[in-house]
Structures are given as structure tokens and as C-alpha cells.
Length: 463
Ligand code: BG6
Image (tube, rainbow, N blue to C red):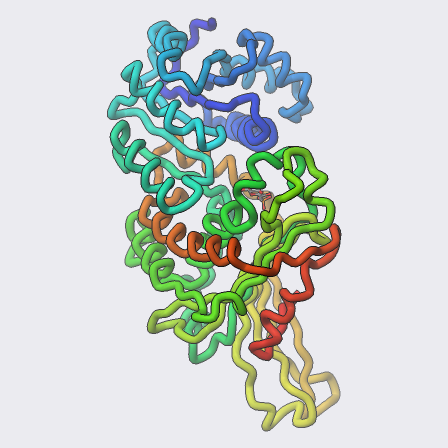
């Protein structure tokens, strides 16, 4: 055990897990490179029987930390200790207490990067050895609960040990640069804010597709499905930012208040079955950990509305899925068509559009019509584009940095989770009773019915 002592200690539960390897440790390394971890050390906790030095060797061998300068990497690794702990047994947290007694860190942040079944035992274990002090913080990876009931129960449990201002519920999408830019774009431009309503906006399309399948996460994913894995959290966060009212200041509370209001005003169509499409990719049941009888949706699309003064009547279409033709995350805001009285008399004028590109590249595009060169009455559609060339901090680096600072803005407040589950519970219920689970080919654009969803409204997805 090393003798170092800093002011902050970040304790990562599940440090040998997939997320920690792929995202958390590389993000922490990037914070270290920016000198943002000067006063922070890291305690990695897992079930694997490593000593600290063995864990560091393992991190080196997995080449998680990519740098040309071995010295830098060693400096970072020196910050990390490892502790083997039976995370699911609150009575087995003695070694953590012993570790803490040997160290003098004042502010402890617990990061639970573990399956949610372990949330309660870990919170109990921390409380059992008295580490839930007023200066501590606790962060939970998503998903927070698997429906309204389990989320409420979990929240009641956690709030016995920690107060709301000590709790950080993570949604890494909110840490993405362009997703944060949605608010700035809407409320820092007098050109766009006045038209952000049902007089001008025709519809909003939110897409988050992936080419990867479930990989090695079958056991988790088969209980989650696209609705719980992506819609309840990431897509609803994006939807909230694209549709909420301006907060009166950019403080965490003011932003969360407006987000919750908009999620509370979401409405699903009365004839819900005609407003949803669920699919499963061919070959899903052959993946590790997936039962032959699985009816889990690896694809979900739906139409809903924000039932408020500003946006009532504007359809919002969401779609997300795995094993599709490509990784694509974006928000398309389509404006109503102009009457073609003056221009393009024979053809329709193209719509104005605003596109927030989130993946594979980040940027914002505005589509408008200009006169066709040499013509008088004919126009063509062109784009003005902002491309985010500066590589911003990875979403997880931003999330971890805000967590260490104790800033709640990019985390999810309990009432938003509660409201989101109310809607997603409905959708899950609908899916379970939905006779149709479309099959789609890997590498395709999903079930054909996803196009019908918009065609019924006389619209189409803007690709
Ligand atoms: C995670 C989901 O929260 O987000 C994964 O559990 C999904 O299933 C991932 O692949 C997508 O994140 P990103 O940042 O790659 O779009």
C-alpha cells in the first residue's frame, strides 16, 4: 500500500470492468495530462485478486493509457492503488476501512461502475464502515433502476445514506460537447430562438444508431433492451435539451427544473401501437448470454409530443438500435415548408433544417435555400456548417472532472429519472404486449416499419 496522501480520493468500484477499461481510466489519464488530478488519487476496487503493483502492470499491458512518454504514464499509474473487495457483501468492507485509516484524504468520491444489482450492497458497505460522511460524494452509472418501481426503491435506499446534493447520476451523453451546445445554439442566437416553436418547427428527429451489436454485454442487455438502455436516459436527455424552455440562469437547479418540466409534458399517442416500432437483429439470439426465447428489442423507434405552449403538435421522432449500418447520433430540426408561390413554382421548396451532429463527427449545420445561379425563380438547398474541429474533452473526462468538482449540472436529478421512467414503463409495457417484433438484418437501416412511422404523417427521416 503506498503512503501518498492527497486531498481527494476517487474510489472506483468495478475498476476491472469493461467501462472502466474503455472509458474511465483513459478519461482519468487525459485529466491527469491536463494537470486536473494534481490533488486526487485513485483507489480501484474490483473482485480480481490484484495487488496495486499488479493492477498497474495490468493497466500497462492492456495499453489503456496511450502516450508516447512512459514517464507520464508512470506518474499517472503511481496515483492508483487497488483493493480486492467482495463488493456484494456489506460485512466484507473491513479492508476498505483499513485502507482509509492509512490514508488521510478528506474528500472521497465513490464511483459505482458496476451492474445495478450491486448499487445497494455497495452503498450499505460504505455506510457500514462510516464513509458516507458529509464531504463524500457518490456517483452511479446508468441505468438507475430498471423501471419506476425499482428506481424509486433504489433512490429511497441511497438517500438514507447520502443526501441529493451528494448523489451524482451519470448520463455520459450530457457530457458530449455538441449535446451541451444545443442549449447555447438555441439561447445564444436571436436568429433561431424566436422560431423554436410550433409555428415554425415541423418536426424533430433524434437518431442514435450503432453498428456494434451487444458484444459481451448480452446478460445485461437482454434485460434492458433499447428502451431502457438508450431511450430512458440518453435520448430523453437530448430531447429535453432540444425542447426545454430557457433556464433563468445557467445554474444546475435552473437547468434541471426546465428539463423536468419538458419531460413531464411528454405525451405518447393514444393509439400507441401505431406510434412505436420495435426490432431485433437477426443473429441476436446467437450472441453470448442471450436466451433462444428472447424478445428483447435491439431497435426502437417512436413518435411522441411535447404537450406545452411552445411545441404542442410538433411530432418528435426517436430511433435507436444496435447492429445497424453505422454509428450515427444526431438531432434534426425540420422547419415548415414555405409556400412555393414565388420560387420553385413547379417543385416544392426544400425545408430549412438545423442539424446537430453528435457522432461520428461533431458540429451544427443550418440548411437554407438560395437562388440557383443564373436562374430567376429557381432555388436550391445549401448548408452552412460549423464543424467542431477542436477535440474537446471526451464526455467521460468532462463528467469525471465535474464530479470531482461537485458540479451537478451535467448529472441527472432524481425527478428527471422518475418522470422518464413513467413514460418508458408505458413503452416497455406496450412492447411486451406488442405482437410485432420486426427482425432486421445486421448492417441494415433497421426494420422497414421505421419509415412507415413517418410516412403515416407525410414525412420522412432526414438522413
Ligand atoms: C451506453 C449504452 O450507455 O451508451 C450502450 O449502454 C451504448 O449500449 C452506448 O452503446 C453508446 O454511447 P456512445 O457514446 O458510444 O454513443
